[in-house]
Image 1 (cartoon, rainbow, N blue to C red):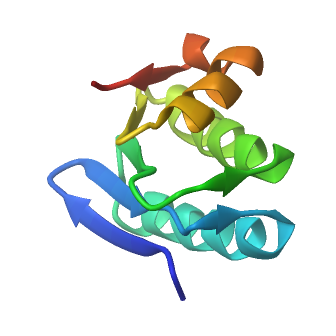
Image 2 (cartoon, rainbow, N blue to C red):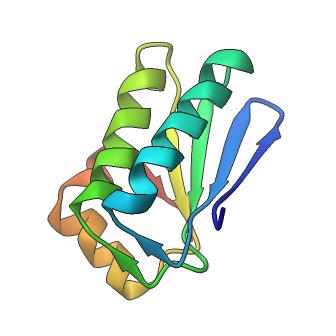
Length: 102
């Protein structure tokens, strides 16, 4: 699997794959949800360092994890966001629920 998951304190770090499409989104969502529930995660950090492509299923991954943790006061962050991914986050309105870290 290309994506990587790591728990650091109360944060689930998800290193996203090169391409985020429907094929990847199902496994990423299921694995992230398992970590969130099993490890009682409070915050999720999506690392887009390697990501060169993301379609609407990537937006779904982010929104789904936001819904899971926001009811407990958790937050979602995005790091290593290039201009292409930043534009997707802005155009989709995700920048209102995801803090884009510089």
